Length: 590
Image (cartoon, rainbow, N blue to C red; front, side, top):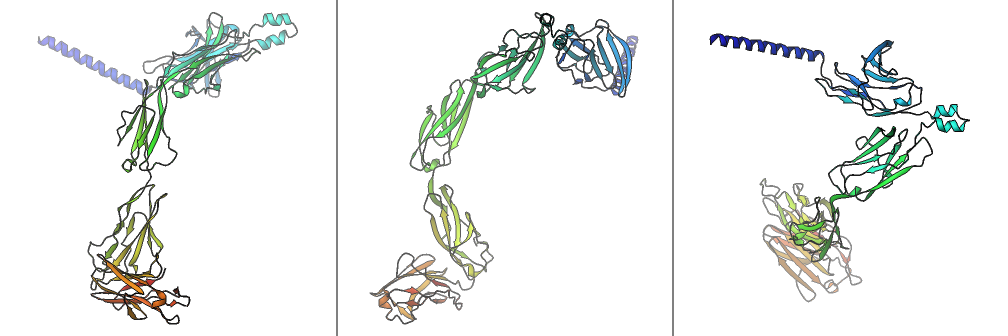
């Protein structure tokens, strides 16, 4: 038993050593001869030759060192044994010339350094016509590679015209080297209808001729582009007639609506005689998934409390079915292509969509309902804003917000005494750092198609020690002979009085004074009969309003009035600041 184990162990060691050496040899071999992706760098092309000429078909390759390059003639890929004829030395290497024993006029010209394997044919005759192809044989480390199949056509019309130009009989009987096609081309179409997403091939085959005819493919009278990725030309020899065939294969990569009901035409052109051009036509039909869009049937912009009409327009083959959907309205029961929707503000900016479905697939599209509605203030600035510049507390507001719901979008502008100071929904209060910046501010909301909204608000700067009030006096903009005195204060307002020429005036038959108050302000209105309360037109008439709180009073003289014609005429206006109690008092005429 021990001897048997020893023999098995020895056998295992021998196999392991042989396997290791084999791997090392293979690795060394690969280092010397690395793998190369075999391919044809420059291949042959179609050639029209005359009898007696010498032609050369190029074949420049990239290959493994041990790969064999061969030539195929009419799909016969071995031309037999080749014998070395001679070596020619040129500037870029040594050319070895081999002659095929079975075809003495066929020679293989090899430049090993440049990997040239060109096929040369001397004294070309009509027997040499056919399809040629260069091939690199498959090796242990690389796949085979093949060139394009090219056609050699031998024409003898020049030589015949030169020899028999004056002898009509011999011209026609000896020079039947040109053989025009005797029939129209054939158009091979795939089974109809085509289906979107599945590629299909259109094949046009020429009638046999010599040399081969040219083919052109049309799509509704427009020449189809001949990109290499879509079109392929194949040249073959018709064994029955010994003539040439041309095949044009066009690949429709993704048939869609642009191919439906298209007329395909294949035209056959024979360039060597005045032979008439022949063509054949066919029709393409495609089943494709719908293309869909929603069209508004409304002549005017959408508004609240109206009805909107929409139409779903879809193109598809087969004819599609419709379904509607929305994110706020149940439309699942609607299958008509036209729908009517009642509009309200709550559906503004919501979407409505249409789905078109057929046997190929379905397509969705949607639009947003943009409904015109007037501006509504969601957040607006307070009428009275108090800032304490002496306090470092975070209780001071930093911005004022004006949020508006409207469509179209509203434009918000901030003003101070008629001058634009900011735009947008936010007004920054951190820029207000001086008492001179307090006063009346306003914001204007402008929405296209709706009346603008204009509101005033007061920015009041509170003194840390005195809580000083703000007084604003003006003549009414709406009514004649009416003055308004507006007093703002964070502490209670005790009294508002009027003075004319430094004399107090009170309500009477000639004038009336009324005062109303809210949380932060009081408004006093003075309505007067001017000729009665102003007895002389030559006197200096001055009207003022006095505001009083627990910290003091404020008075301002306004203007001089000329009453010569019985009406008040503004002579001047000014701002007057009384710093004794630090009231802010403004009195002017509009």
